[in-house]
Image 1 (tube, rainbow, N blue to C red):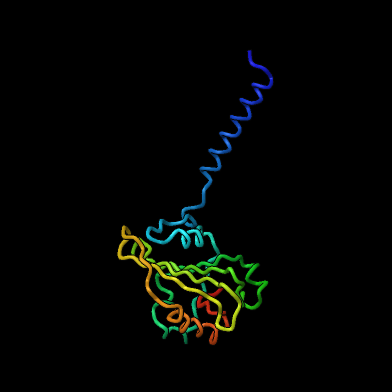
Image 2 (cartoon, rainbow, N blue to C red):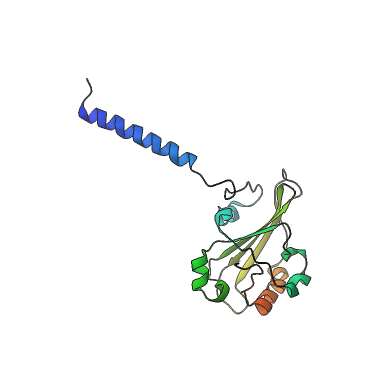
Length: 176
């Protein structure tokens, strides 16, 4: 014969099991789901985890910056920032200067796979921008990403132009 306590425990177990099943099926949408990033070190993968659910920066750089090359053109790129629109607006015009801890991810797509992931991280407020950069690239959808051996000054040379021309704290792409 079951006791009231036994029935209560059985009911609690059934509710918990249902809640686990519902939460497991309620993951992020396909658009926001983290893509597989083989070859990217765990520390950087954790830093950008869920980036597709972040705020997209959809306004391309001004035309005069187009001469800096394809790294900042509008085709095949998706740009995301780990801040909300409200957080960026609190920081001033167009969300700048960006707060330390801001992360910008650039995803470059070729056909149906991600060819490159570039990560821009604001580490400190400083006259030189305070950003660090890393970029990973791969040759096919089944290949692992490999880190490009670029120095920070390689990226900084162009990103300083975004600050001078657009006053966007080194970020080329902006809020709509």
